[in-house]
Amino acid sequence: MGFTRMAFSPEDGLNNTVHYPTTPVSEADARAQVQSVSDQLKAYLNNTLLAQMESTLLGQSGAERIGSAAVANVLGETVRTQIADVKRQIDDASMGSVSDGTIVTAKLADAAVTKTKLHPDAMDWTLVADSGVLNASGSFTMTAQTGKSEMLVQLCNDTGTVVSGMFVAPLDANGVMIPACQRVVSFNPADFSVDYRSITMASATTIVYGLSRAYSVDGVTNLQRAYVFVR
Image 1 (cartoon, rainbow, N blue to C red):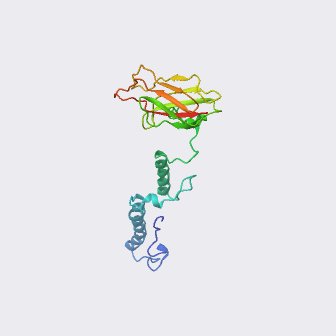
Image 2: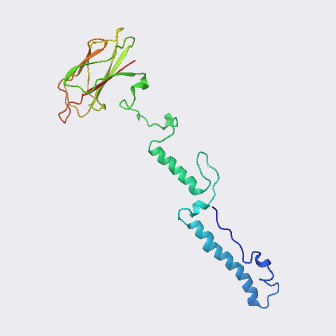
Image 3: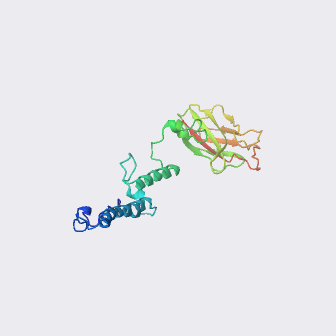
């Protein structure tokens, strides 16, 4: 868009000998010739150029008229379009739309990646069973895990959020847990349980569980689901 260019009236200014005679007939005429050109400059600067530079109207703002050299990874050729694109990139980042593969290790705060946020797949764990919502005790089955050496069980609430704890146990050649029974200690601060939670593998496919009398402060057991991973 740019700024409105100034033009003298007449276009050739003082060079126009008809509008500005070479020999003015009086001192007043001579002053009027010089003042006329000066007034045109003043009017353009105050009423046109500055007005356009100071405008904040969308589509007519000064920042939309001022050109700007190219900036790496920023779109636009004017100050406003470049600022708008930088804002878009910031908004995308704040909404989680950061381009894949752009966050480097140095950008992560110390201790930012916690156990509850680290997906088991990051450690080569493979999800092999979801118990579904559990009762006070019982069992559920999964496919045989022969050839695997370790099993991880996450204890969750009914929606699958890890709230109660986890444990890792070795598997024998037949895919059965060693030792057969695991006691699980809660890491939920709201859980004041002093009782046990047990997980037993009766075979390479059957997991037996007992929730004991482990309750959270709202009176509802927080061990209502189990995810089983192996590697």
